[in-house]
Amino acid sequence: MYRDVSQKNSDGKRSARERLQEQRLREESRTRRKRTLIAAAVVVAVLGVGAGIGALVAHSGKDEKKEAGPPVDPQGATGKDSATIPVGKPAAKATLTVYEDFRCPGCAQFENAFRDTVHDLEAKGLLKTEYHLVTLIDNNLGGTGSLNAANAAACAQDAGKFAAYHDVLYKNQPPEPDDAFGKKPRLIELAGQVKGLDTPAFRKCVNDGTHDSWVKKSHEAFGKSSFRATPTVLLDGKNVYGDQSNPLTPQKLRKMVTDAQK
Image 1 (cartoon, one colour):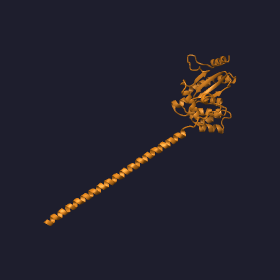
Image 2 (cartoon, one colour):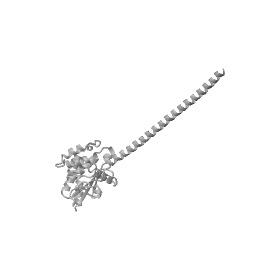
Image 3 (tube, helix red, strand yellow):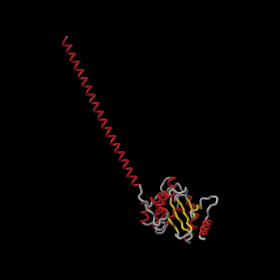
Image 4 (cartoon, rainbow, N blue to C red):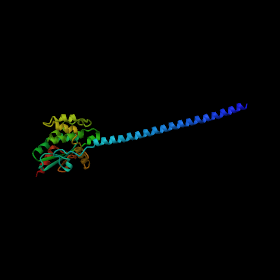
C-alpha cells in the first residue's frame, strides 16, 4: 500500500516535472518563433526602406534626366532673355509683336487672315515682326504639340527658315484637341514643304528637343506678362487685336504701319 502511494507520488512528481519541462519547451519555442518573426519584420522593414530610398534615388535620377539643361537659344533670337524670334528688316520703323501657340486655333485664324499683309509689309522694310512662342494648349488640354512644334520652329530658325516653316505649321494645324504636333515625325514631314529644311541637322534638333528649354523660358516670360491669351498682337506696344468692337483687318493694319512711317 505504502509502495503504491509512494509510486503514485513519484509518478505525480514526474508528471509535474514533465509538464513543467514541456511548458518550458513550449515557451522557448514561442520565444524562438517570436524572435524569428521580429527578425523577419526587421528585414522586411529594412528592405522596404531600402526600396523606398531606391525609388527616391531612381525618381531623382529620372527627374535629373528630365531636368533640361541651360536653354539653347535659337540662332538670331533677340530681346530680353533671347525669347524673341525676329522676322523682317531690323531697321523697319514699325514692330509687330505676336504671342502665339502652334496648337491655338485663334492663332491660326490670325495667321491665315494676316499672313500675306504682314509678309508684304516685311518685304518692303516697313514692318518687323517679333514672335514669342508659348505652350498654353499643352497646359490646358495636355499633350506636347505646342512644345514640340515650337521647338521645331526654333530648329527652323537655326536653319534660317523660321518664317516659311512657321507658316506651314499654321496652314496644317490639326484640330485643337488633336495633339498631332506632339508626334515629331509629323513635324519633320511638314518640314519637307520648306525647301532645304529637312536635313539631318534639323531632324536631330527636332528629335532631341534641342530648344525645349528655350520654349519653356519663352512661355514663362509670357506667364509673367500682363497677357493671358493667344494670339496677343501688339503694334509698337499697343494691343491691336483684342478689341472685338473695333476688330483689326488687314487693311487697318496696313494703314497703321504706313502711318508709322511718317
